[in-house]
Amino acid sequence: MSAPSEPAARSAAHRAPRAGAPVSAPPSAAAAAAASAPPLARHPGTSERGRRPAADWRIRFGALSLIWGFSFLLIKVGTDAFAPFQVTFGRLLSGTAVLAIAMAVRRERVPRSLRTWGHLTVAAFFLNALPFSLFAYAETTMPSTLAGICNATSPLWGMALSIVALSEDRPTRRRVAGLGLGFLGVLTVLGAWQGFSGLDLSGTAMALLASLSYPIGWIYVRRTLAGTGSSTLALTGSQLFIGTLQLTLVTPLFTSAPDTFPLLPTLAVVALGALGTGLAVLLQYGLVEEVGPTTAQMVTYFIPVIATAAGVALLGEQLSWNTPVGAVIVLAGAFLTQSRTVPAAPPPADRP
Image (cartoon, rainbow, N blue to C red; front, side, top):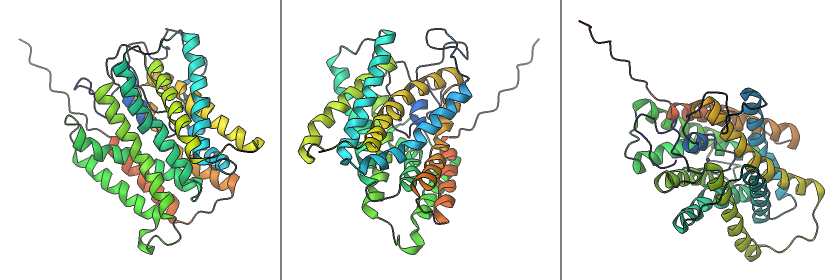
C-alpha cells in the first residue's frame, strides 16, 4: 500500500506524495496508491511520458480490482502445496521480475544512496515481507473470504495510527465515527456476540496484523523516502528486490525445499506475484496519474467483494450472514475515515 508529509493543501489520505515514495504491492493498497503516487502534473489521460494509455482507465480499474480481489484465492491455492514462506518468496520473486522488466524498458536507475536502501529495507519488511507472510500463514487456517475482509481494515488502522504519528493529519468527527463504525464491522464479521465461536483466532490475528503492517509501512515511507530523487517505479522495484532477499534468507530456516511443484499451486504463486504484486503496481501508478488518488483508491472497496465472491464460487467456502453484513459495515467505516470535509469557498471580495 502512509508516506512522508506533503504540502498542507493536500489531505492526508487523498494526497499524492512527492516523487520518490514507494508503495507496497499488496492486494490492499489502493490506499497506498493515494499515499505514494507522484504528484499530478500532466493533463488527465496522459501517461508519465506523455502518451495516452491504450486502455480506458475504467477497464484498468476493473482489472486492478479483479487482480487484487483474486489474490486471496491465489494465496489459498498456493498454500495447499507450499509452505507460507515459500508462497511469499515466489510471490516476491515473480513481482520483482515484472518490475525489473518495466524498469529496464523505461531505463529507470536504482537508488544510489545507502541511506535510501536502508529505508527501503524497513519499507520492504512492513509493506511486503511481513504482511505477505502473515496472510499466507493466516490462510492455512482461515477462509480466503475472511482474509480479504480483514485486509479491508487497513484504512481503519491507518486512521488510528495517523492520529498518533502524523501531526498534520488531524481527525474530524466524521473520520472518528468511521473508525468506530469500521471496528464495529470487524466485530460483526468475527461474531463477537457468539464469543468468536468457530473462529480460528490465530489465523484471524495474523490477518489483522498483516493489515496493520501496511499503514505502519506507509507512515514510515512518508517520513523517510520523500524527495530522494528516484522515481516511484525505481524505488518500488528496489523495495520488492530487498523483500525478495529477506525471504531468501528466512525461507530456508523454516522450510525445506519442496519435493514437487504441482502445476496449479505453482501457477497460482507465479500469478500472485506477476499479476498481484507486479502488474497491479503498474496499473495502480497509471490510474493515480490519470484520474488521481481519490478515484484510484476506490479500488479498496471492491477487493473484499471480489475476494468473497471468488472464495465462495471457486473454493466452495461457506458464508454466514454476519460475514457480508460485517464487511459492508467495515467498508462504510473505511470510506468515512478516508473522507474529507471540503471547506466552503470564501465569497468573492467586493470590487470597487
